[in-house]
Amino acid sequence: MNETMDQAKAEAFASRMMGLLNDAFVGILVSIGHQTSLFDTMAEMPAATSEAIAQATGLQERYVREWLGGMVVARIVMYDPPSKTYVLPREHAAFLTRSAGANNLAFFTQYIRGVGAVEQDVIRAFREGGGVGYEKYPDFQRLQAEESARLYDTALVETILPLADGVVERLRSGIDVIDLGTGQGHAVNVMARAFPNSRFLGVDFSSEGIEAARAEAARWKLPNARFEVADIMAGLPGEFDFVTAFDVIHDLARPRAVLAHINRALRQGGVFLMMDIAASSHLEENLDHPLGPGLYASSVMHCMMVSLAQGGEGLGAMWGEQVAREYLKEAGFSDIQTHHLEGDPMHVFYVARA
Image (cartoon, rainbow, N blue to C red):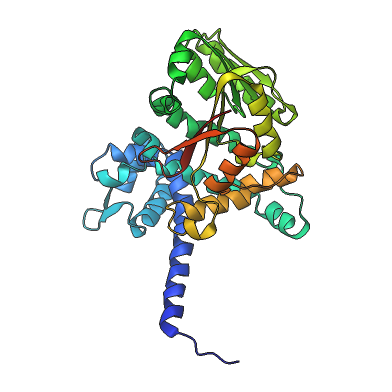
């Protein structure tokens, strides 16, 4: 059956695709700007030539000039043709520099490189199954540690932990705490430094991550923080008063089993604090999610893949609040509360008690 094409609709979609292609490449240039500190340097400079910017950053002028061209046409950097000078507007620097802290969105463009490197492995998995193993993402844990450190340093003790009523007071008195999938252990070390009377254990299957965690704990002189290489899918190593899992559960091969292990490992009155991706389990309710496309892409390129590589469930990052609540209830948690932090559209915090 012949159907007449809506020409205006076709042209609008073509325009969207052109924008998508441009933005994809601009994302790589932004990553370069972050990694070379070009944004940080320009934020402190008045309007300057490419030669002056290159000198200030210690970079080669020819490369800087071409990069600046991309930034100008992307409307990220402003350019004055008569003086051939470039300036990074203060309003843009607020989301592109390290001094912006958690608002530094340029940081996230580094993930483009990581997921791009496994594109062919992901395509193979699309055709054959089997997922993509963690070993294919050698830089991922470092980026995750850097990303989460900004949140932990600014919000963990003062904002996130108080979401669980009574936990901060108990931490001050002294309780046993375990952090699952601790990565490089920064969350544990931040908590251990803030609450010296409590005892903290961080576990992860990555020996490299555990070594980094132990090194930081040694630098900070934290006798109440320890770290172990462990497979939490086999169970938790002991009983605890407080269990945390920051952006971990949806990556696991067997999330249901791990949540059940957590419930069994909690002592009477124990609390489980889970940070995960803020989303709905229903696709149609994520249409206006400000980070929706990026989160689904991250799920396809990493979260779902690493779970399936272990023969797992492949929940993916966008498993959503409805499914998360269902899994927590199945694991034996009856009191489940959810919290969101102002200005953080990415995370939801679950406080669960048996």
